[in-house]
Length: 95
Image (tube, rainbow, N blue to C red; front, side, top):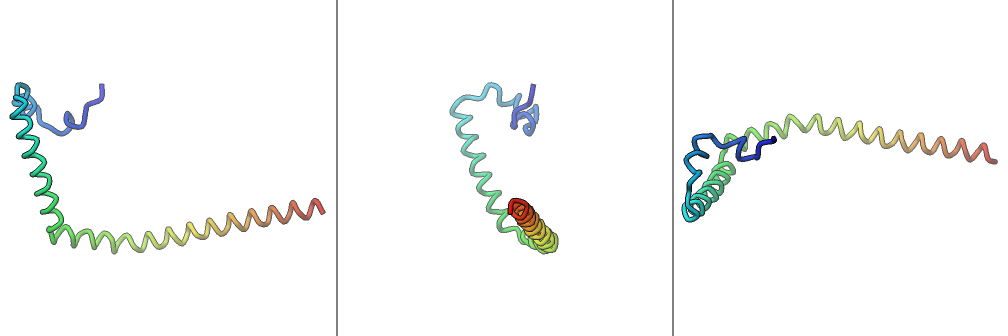
């Protein structure tokens, strides 16, 4: 049977410790976890090293993206050209 997301991530000791948690305690831990996520996301956005790394990836990726865009444009053009030639060929056969 497939594991749920939390089963894949949480440690067995955490789950075992929370098996008998009360609703009130679970709600409080839920709020604490949500605030932790907000704090971590804020830290992530403010992380200069991560921002610099993203810029490096963006710069490195730019050449590939440009080349792929060019090749896709060639494919689109050639497909239109083939379609046009086929149409012209069929049109000339009918005439």
